[in-house]
Each structure stands twice: as C-alpha cells, then as structure tokens.
Image (cartoon, rainbow, N blue to C red):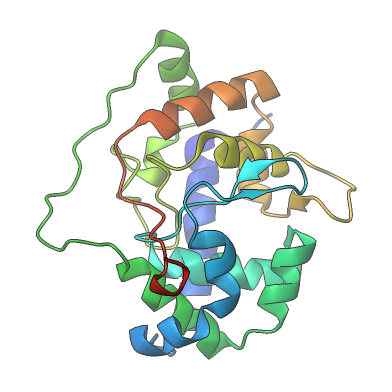
Length: 221
C-alpha cells in the first residue's frame, strides 16, 4: 500500500524540524556570509549560469530562498545525502557556522521587506493541476509555492525550469554514486511520477511568480 502524499509531507516536516532544532543554536551573520561567499558567487551570482553535471541546466536561484532550507541543503551535500561531486566538495569545506552565515546572507539578498506575500497560485493547465493534487505539493510548499509550511522547505515558484526537473529526477535515482538525493520522503513523492510528468510540474512551477532570484554579485559586475 502506498503512503499518501499528505502523510509523506507530515513525515518530512518532522524530519526538517529535527534538522532545524539542531541548527537553532547557530545564528547566521549576514556580513560574515557575504565575506564567505567567494565559492558560491561564481555560479549563483551569474544570471543564467549553467552547470553541466549531471546534465546541462541552470544552477538554482538562491537569493531570497528560505534560510533554514539553505542550511539543510548544504548539510545534505556535506553528508552525501545529496550526491553532487562539486557541491559536496564545497560543502565539505564549510563549518556549521559557515553554512549558517551563507544562508543568512542569501536569504535576505534581493528581498524587499515591504513587498506583499504572493497569493494562491493559479493551478494552470488541467495536467499540472492534476499532478499538483496527486503529489499534495501545496501541503508542504504552500498555495503560492513561495510560502512553505515550514522554513526548512524550499520556495519553488519562479525557480529555473531545468533545475527543478533535474532536482525532481534526482529523488528517483538509485544506485548511482554521483547522482541522487537520499531524502526518502521526497523520493516517495517523486517516484509517483514519470519523468514526463516531472517535466510538466517543473514547467508549471517555473512559470509562477516567485520570490527567489539570481542577484549578480558586485564583484562580478
């Protein structure tokens, strides 16, 4: 019997809560994060910059992303839960405080505090709406896909389509030493869908108005 997507989300929330509690004692410093982001800006500070592993896709927009999600993602690369050689190499060089500082910096980068929160997203085409319902996506990522139900979840709206597709596929990967994300809960969600359906989801989410963006670094302008 398959685990309902809503239950998977609840289990994921419990997991994220544990990670967040462990990181709670560390407070990120925005100024320190700006000084430490030299390894990050060469990819995440260039609009439209493309990675070539495991396939060609734009590196994700991380400015304005949730702070705790950034910390959790870096920790997952460092532990090997997320398999990506270059990201693991970078994350392995970071202390927990480094991760907290970088997350604090990127989470506020390009953010206008006076901007009103985005409203409920239009579910779009019949196929996209069907897939969003099947995956219970809004129960974790929120109705706008920019205000997740927990800060350890990512904002998805407006993210690069090709990155979303590669990320979703990676949760389905098994037995590959260099590709994959070991999150069993997201794996359970992603494995419900064919790659063609994941592409529809990625295209839908990318087309939504969002809060994440790529901000060119002053040092690269």
